[in-house]
Amino acid sequence: MNNFLQRALVALIGIPLMIGAAIAGGIWFFVLVQIIAVGVMYEFYRLAAKKQTHPQYIIGLAAITGILIFFAYHSLADVFRWEYEIFDAFEFIATTALFFILLSVVYELYRHKGSSFLNIGITMFGVLYVGAGMGTFLGLRELFDSGAIIILILISIWVCDTAAYLGGKALGKHKLYTAISPNKTVEGAAFGLFFAVMTAIACKYIFMSELALHDAIIIGLIVGIVGQVGDLAESMLKRDVGVKDSSAFFPGHGGFLDRFDSILFVSPAVYLYVMTGMNL
View 1 (tube, rainbow, N blue to C red):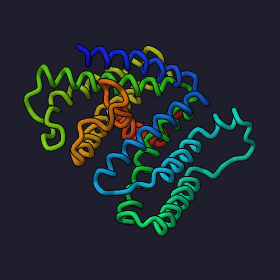
View 2: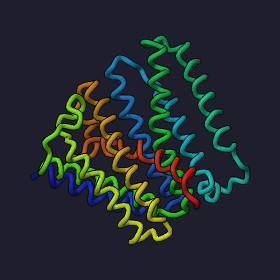
View 3: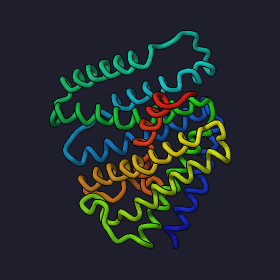
View 4: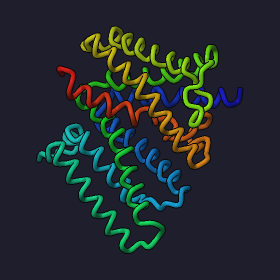
């Protein structure tokens, strides 16, 4: 009961905060996503450090901050009165990647701590893993110029997770992936997928009427499939280092990485679909 009350209290504070920031947009949403990204990155690097690697924390955090600024550039330009245009997407990402890779290599020349191969590799993987996930999360808010798509994704993920848990508890008989997450079942995953799609459709009719029905269904499928893969991926990383949670930052919920693992996979997938398969 104590654990349930902790989880309920965190949800009572966290959910309105996320939704409120998504609706407000601009600097408010950027700051919240930046805080989440820093928390996720820090916890990811801490997990990696348990495997005898030495991530470059400052370089990694600087890189994801640059990525987030890029995705939120137009909102931030209005706040800070920036009058110049930055590179297009490909040029910016390529330039940023090259700059921070070179910086990471140079840093290792003077560091002499563990394996340079592993240190550079895990630092840059963290930048890609967290930067792409949280950057496209910001980017979706910018593309729609509204918090509706963010709220749809968040609610669909929350419902998917809850339905998968309850469905697995009630009807689960066939293990989904015992080696990674022994408690997850095929039946639970199917429940999560079904209710993710139903939630996306419901959101379309309740507050996002401009979204086509087939787009809502596809986004729901992305949440239900890719989101659960993201959860399994994080479970794989935690199992590899022998921990149950990425941290205890959120009482009853684990850490930043535990709470936002699905978003790290869902956001890039939805962003790619929106950019290539939808008429905005």
